Length: 153
Image 1 (tube, rainbow, N blue to C red):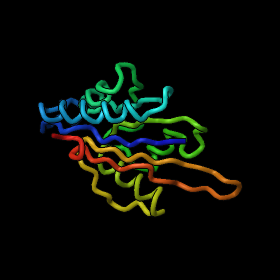
Image 2: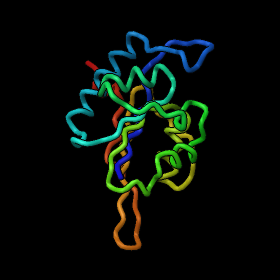
Image 3: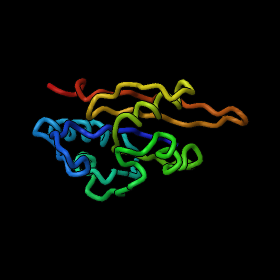
């Protein structure tokens, strides 16, 4: 299973967390990362977005049809997000999750370091993790960690 954790792009501040929208810069970030992902993703993949407007706006740059999932909302714990994804038992599928901090950083650290540390993940950035099983040995590999700043002109 490939798990791509994509933090939503830059969003406006606001009191209603689920209603916050992308800034002009956020729209640019989302478009740049979507273009980068589009060239690398397999033909078939799942795209999940939280109920937060900024997450859905970010996802829409990659594809217009995506799954809106409350199980990856901003206030959800990292372990619950993995449970919603059925990690690592999701088979050979690829799932792109447009989500939030702090759970993206905690998922990445938990899978790579076996501890839910607070990894800082910049807005618009991607962590691409891959689960492989070789007999009794299971491993998680970091395929790429791409900050959106590496794509900006």
